[in-house]
Amino acid sequence: MTTTTLNVRSGTAVMVGRELRRTVRSIDGLVLSIVLPAMILLSFVVIFGGAMNTGTEYVDYVVPAVIVLCAGYGAANTAVSVATDMTTGTIGRFRTLPTYGSAVLVGHVITSVLRNLASSAVVVGVSFALGFRPSGNVAGWLTAVGILLVFVVAMTWIACLLGLLLSPEAASGSTFLMIFLPYISSGFVPVNTLPEWIRGIAEHQPLTPVIEAVRSNLMGNTAYDDVWLALAWWIPLGVAAHAGAAVLFQRTRKR
Image (tube, rainbow, N blue to C red; front, side, top):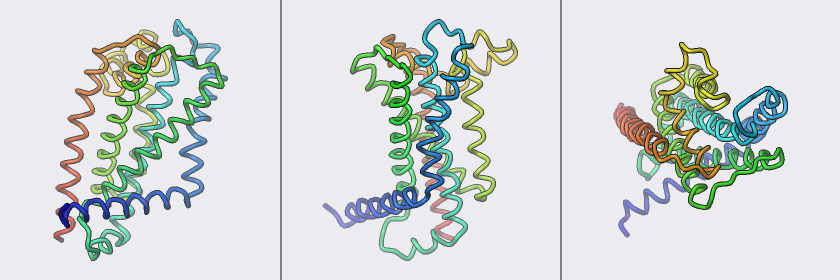
């Protein structure tokens, strides 16, 4: 094992530990990550669920959308953390350490994925208490989790790219998009119930295949078209965002 490999592993472990400690010490952020997803699910199922006609139990229909909404929101918050690191001299301090440069970004991504897995587990746990009864098999669950992982990792790299480009204040605005975008999809109501002028956006925006793929696999109706379409959207987006973030980060290191 080479010295460079050890530096990559040890540097990444240090940065992941740093972000995990920041997450635990930020009480308001921890509450938002854990409590907010459960509150959103409760609001839709308990308050609006009785008025929704989706052809199935509403809790079965809406759980994938709430998971995607909260996972996207949690990933987008990474943009604020990265922008803060870039503007407070933290990155400059890390440059003096004997570790590889991108460890700080990788630390943000891994911590965001862990945080979103925890919040998704809370959503699923609360949904079972509300009557969620998925009929998918083990392969369906693994496929749904895999699609969500691809989505969260890609979203987090996009958030890292925004954090490198924007100020902390502007980066915080990126969370608005991830809160708003799932509502223009098939996540909360069937697309054919939306106004006609907005159906085209709902049917072809990148969150819809993620939600449909997760929903169908959890409910035992594997829809391969949605799985492949979700991967076709989010793998290229994640790779492009990762490459863009790496280039921007290297440029800042040379200044």
